[in-house]
Length: 455
Image (cartoon, rainbow, N blue to C red; front, side, top):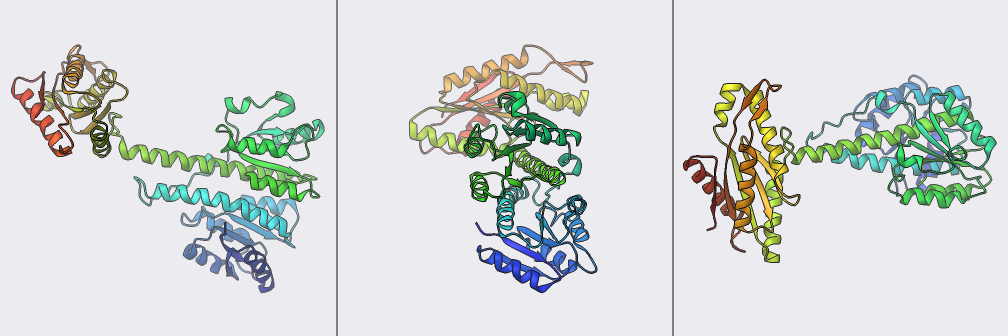
């Protein structure tokens, strides 16, 4: 996998050196010599990753990073601060500015490639989720998660069979507000399934188990697949670290562990995990909103049309019966006029509840609009569909509806029309038109009844 990477450094030799290293790995490289050019190019080219020098004249890297993260169009781009400064305080300052990671000059090829590969996977996931969200119900309105959503203390599981290092790491993390469980304390990993874990801290130095095999298990397990894995690595066993990253680990930290670096990497991984979770939730919610009627929780007209077409095709191919029932609330306008629209909405919601309670799990209940409901009844001939509609009608009429905090009680009835698919040449429009005609006949015959049209 190759990435589009923006290198920002005021010294040309530094830019060219990083460019050569990255292009050797088949990445596409963009170059900027100062902060303003970097901001412009980030907006124009939307790189997957930005390698940002800290020490630049005019606008330094910290300010550039803050501006990138403050702008909605660039806030999602991972930023790696590249600095000659090795002081932990400078690293923390970069992370506070919004950077996802940091590298120290002279840049080590192994660390450069591992950081880039890790960020490429993260960027690919978030980019796809952001595109799905932007193409969903709120087209283009991609909301940036707040710092409060991302920066809550993390739940961390430390997997290290060395009691001394495990305790030291756990104490450091707990002292900084994180909730930590160690493998030695718990005795097993069952806790991860009971309470959400943000980061798995796995020591590749462990001897009583195979940590790489364990990482592979995490990546194939449904419970742990989405959790960030941070590896603790020996600098002399880089091949093992590379294998861990290939398996799916999110990041690594070399021993001896620098406390500030550990806290920074835990924070980064926690933010990434939560950012992806938030995006996934929003995408799922967007898909739900695109097919669900928000008042009643039933499917909307768009979903109804798509599903009915699918069921009709299956019915024809499998020679199975298919029916629909169309329902309408009797004198609904009178309910609104007498008790108000809030009461009318509560009636619609109660109708939906009684409808759900009196149809089969395989049936598809929809609210196309207004006071009209429709149920798709797969594998159901006309006589069974009529009986189902009659059951729903009786359930609605059986007892009055309590509305407006139970301060008022309303008698509600419905009328229903039923029709069945006639064969391979029958169309959706004809099927629905027959149900509508049957519903009209039920209304004309006095309401609170079911009519059917077979042909």
